[in-house]
Image 1: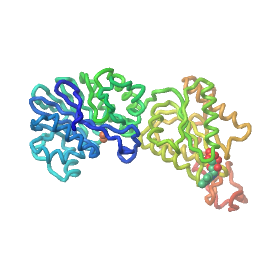
Image 2: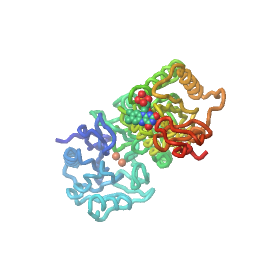
Image 3: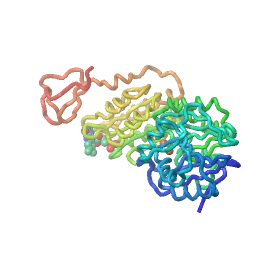
Image 4: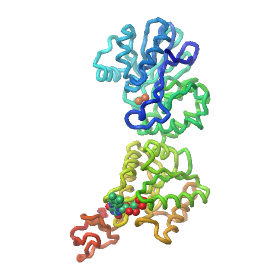
Length: 454
Ligand SMILES: Cc1cc2nc3c(=O)[nH]c(=O)nc-3n(C[C@H](O)[C@H](O)[C@H](O)COP(=O)(O)O)c2cc1C
Ligand SMILES: [Fe+2]
Ligand SMILES: [Fe+2]
């Protein structure tokens, strides 16, 4: 049985929702499900805007049959060849051999690769090309890497609708409401829109900015994305967020504390820091990276201006869940944040140095001060260090001048000292005496090396 909704007088949403798969693209949890949007235009020609994921193909083909009402399918605009939209394109071509594909040359290659078939007579579109379907005229604009190289968006010059592919999409099934103004988007959807953006296209900020620039030159009254609600009112709400996200600008001045903790020592320090920040009137939030999927933490790291990473040392390395998160942040090009570190280790704390190294690969991550070091748990009297850190964060969040310049990031990445190559014990000293013996594994000074080449 079909399940469709009218978008305009001659445009029908014929997509479908998947609420059964626990993850999207084998990576991101989708507890609220996922929508795969597809649209059919009934002009003098009929035009299908993309197909759908294989998980919802039965519903999609029933919707398409109903919406076509026996008419032939004239055009299929292929905005994006990723299988969450194009998995059913092969089936569609078999069912509707009369349809002409409209796409760019990169999409043709991907159709060959994914569907082992050569689309006959496809109309290839380049930047700015137009196509008239009767009452409507469409212009095509490339949007490479939003989210794949072949992505194009199309703009209906007649009704001023942007078919935006993955851009402006979100995780979450459509539970009846189709339009963003039929829900409280800011309250109920923005977190998932942010998580979708940051995880799916967060890495490609400059390319998203290029698309936003093209969009700014168009009179857009409606945005039809491939996932999530359709925008027909208050477009600035989502456009403003995109401008910030694409520029790696924080939305909130405040502190996020992603932490990992095995036995609770690091967590207690993170708790105390969060309390001191709240008492100072600073917006603060905490996330346990061992139990929170990193896609959620990544999204919040894009949101906040300040981030304190707190993690134990683990077999001379950085605790795994924190390492995963931080590599993911670097991978998604997160930049322009002020950060601080809390490290923990019972015999040779190294997590601060390791977190500093990952931060050192990222752009414009300003380290506020040297890491707070815990040796198993906060020692009596060490609370003061967290108070100092809270005060420094509060000053920075408010945009005030710090009382005195903190140590620079390079100072932290290159701590002074020598590390035992056998057990990882760190001697915090400028010099290594010849007769030095490792207090942990009893190896001689010759088994030590400088912490870094400073
Ligand atoms: C499997 C394992 C490996 C560890 N490896 C190291 C290490 O290489 N160096 C170190 O200083 N501490 C190491 N530790 C100790 C923890 O870093 C330390 O106990 C820390 O206090 C744990 O913090 P938490 O209380 O927040 O879990 C290890 C702990 C575990 C459980
Ligand atoms: Fe995609
Ligand atoms: Fe997609």
